[in-house]
Every structure is written in structure tokens, then in C-alpha cells.
Length: 243
Image (cartoon, rainbow, N blue to C red; front, side, top):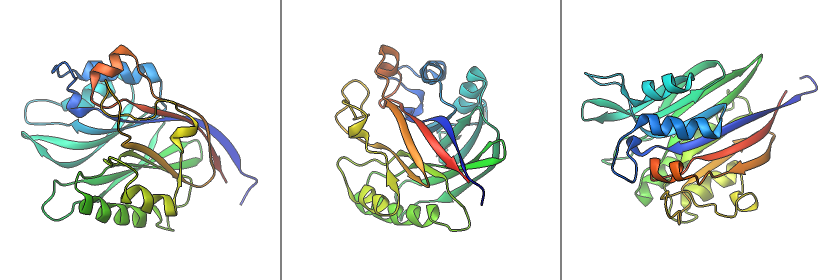
């Protein structure tokens, strides 16, 4: 083990709601515009429509608009197209995998793991979208906790996404027992990220394993961001220690 060193990275999580805005218009370009405005190095998206029989899908369109590399972890099909989580990155993606988080007859869900290359260092980023049912989330939180604590994969690890909890629920509690949680309250006055126009809930979270310091946290409430999706992007500037 060497002395270790710190790197600063802008990471974000954003449920794009199938790129359908609160005005009823579907626009991947508008979502790309919101992402461009927050300038992330890496961003985890949920509810993304992927490739289908007749199109390359929204993930491809957003990636092309931003000039960012991307990988998709499809959880299911939606009207013949892939549907699930996407990670976009300005940095090289070293490895990509997904874990099934589906529970019983509930809608299929997954956890996407993307290993980001920062020169010789690797950051493991987990992008999740948990279910809407309480028992389903309880199962998923336990499963996610096990996935993230796989000792074969070394920190630093960042877990982010849409945890679908109306209040500080069980999934949050279970994950907080085993992972550090970024306390949004100390960084944001308006910390609730859903729905966009009147954010009264707090569904989007960032957890980490390893040595991570929060430089700043942003919840951009521009007119564009408030209209583009029913969530707002949550952006964190992090200092991350690599050994």
C-alpha cells in the first residue's frame, strides 16, 4: 500500500423519467442540456429508454449530444425498447456489470456497477433504482448491501440512484448501517429532489465506502431542470482517496 492520494470528481444522479418532462413533451435533448449545465464527470441515470427495433434510444442520443461514453444496464423492455439504468462518463469505463434486484412479481430492477478509470486508479460506481413497494425495497436493500460489500472489490465505492423512499425508510436505514451516507441536510437547504417543480420528497441518495469528502452538493433548480423530468439532478463534488 502506498501513501495514498486524493482526487476530486463531480458525480451526479438523475432520474430522467423516460425523458418525459412535466409539460408532457419527451425530449432527450432537453435532458442532455440539463446534464451539460451541471458538468458532471460521471452521471448515473435511471428510467432511461434504450435501443429498440427502430431507434438507438435515448441513451445513445444523450451520450452523443454530450460527447460522453455510456453503458446501459437494462432491467426490462418498455414498448419493445430496452429500459433501465445508464451511466455516462467523461472518463474511461474499465468494466461494466449488473446485478438483479428483482423481487417476486414486482417490476424487474437491477443494480448497475461501472468501474471508472482515473489513470491507474479505479472507482466502483453503483447505480440503483429501487422498487416502490416497502417489502420489495427491504429485500433490495439487503441484496444491495451484500453486493456493495463484496470484499473482492476494493473501495472506494460510490452508491447512488433513486431509492424510492417517501421518508427515511428501511432501505436507507439498512444501507446507512454498512455504508457512509452523504448527509444532504448539511449541504442543501432544499434537499428534496422529487417531483421537480415542488420537491417535497427525498428519494435520491449518495452513499460511499472508503474515504470520501464532500466538497459541495448541488440541486440545480433552473427552469430547464424543473421542467425536463419529475426529478432534479443531484450533483456532488467529491474528494476521493485512492491507495
